[in-house]
Image 1: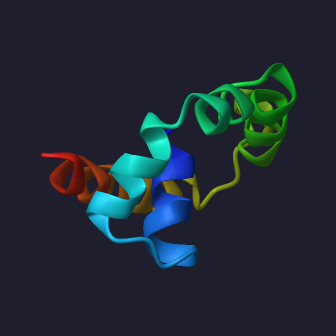
Image 2: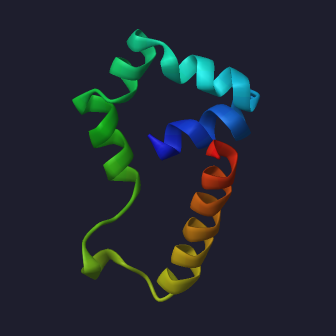
Length: 75
């Protein structure tokens, strides 16, 4: 869900209000949280420790800062 919010705001050009409206649409929400959409999102992010590269702390820090930005937007 966080990835979808980020996608709406940063890549599709939605305003915060527009993203909120989009997320309140039941059909959109159902598609976003479908099993297929979840599997696609999980495939983009390695979860196993053996797949983590030496730059993982840097990637984690970047991901953390992006999540903090999304949190600020949602507040």
